[in-house]
Length: 235
Image 1 (tube, rainbow, N blue to C red):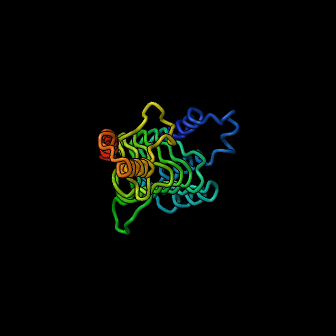
Image 2: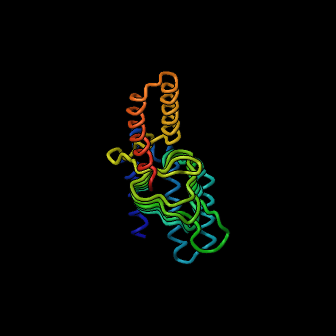
Image 3: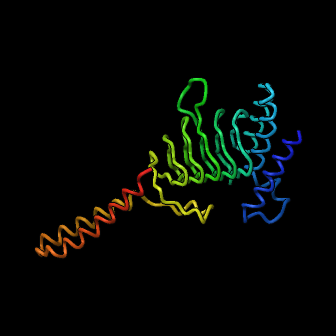
C-alpha cells in the first residue's frame, strides 16, 4: 500500500515537473487524463500482481472509459512516466516501460503475435515516443532513444538513437541536451532526396559545360555528404 501511494505521488510530481502548461495543482484533477490513467493503472496493477484478475480488469476498464487510455494491468511501468495529452494511448499486457519515459497521444505499445509470453515492447529509461507512434512486438527501445511522431517501429532501436518513418529506420543522431525536443529529428527521406538532386545538378552542369575540374570538386563534397548519411543510418 505504501509503495502504491509513493508511486502515485511520484506520478503527480512528474506532471508538475514536466508540463509548463500546468498553472495550479487544482488543474491536475480535471485536465490531465494521462495522470489519471496512470493512477487507475497503479491501483489495478497492484491487485494484478497479487493474483487478482477480474477486479483489476474492471478498474482498468473504468479508467479507459474516463481517460481514453488503455493500459493493461499486467504491464510494467516505472516511475517518472509522463503521458502527455494521453488520448488514445494503448499499452499492452506484457509491455515494460522504464523510468522517466515521455509518451504522447495516440501511441500504441502493441503486440504482433497471439502466442503466450512476451509479445509487447520493452521501453528503457528516458525514451521519448512521439505522437501517433506504433511500437509493435517483443522489441526493445534502448535507453535515451527517440521515436518520431507517427513512426511504426517493428525492430529494436539501440540506445541514444532516433527512429523515424514507416517502417521506422534508425539514425544515430540525437540531441541529448534537449530531452523534450522530440521535434528535432533528422528527416531521412528529405536528406536523401537533397543528395540525389544535388548529384543530378552536378551531372547536368558537367554535361553542358564539360568542366571536369568543377565536377570532381563537387563530386568529392557530395561523397562526404553521402558517407555522413550512411554513418548516421547505421544502428
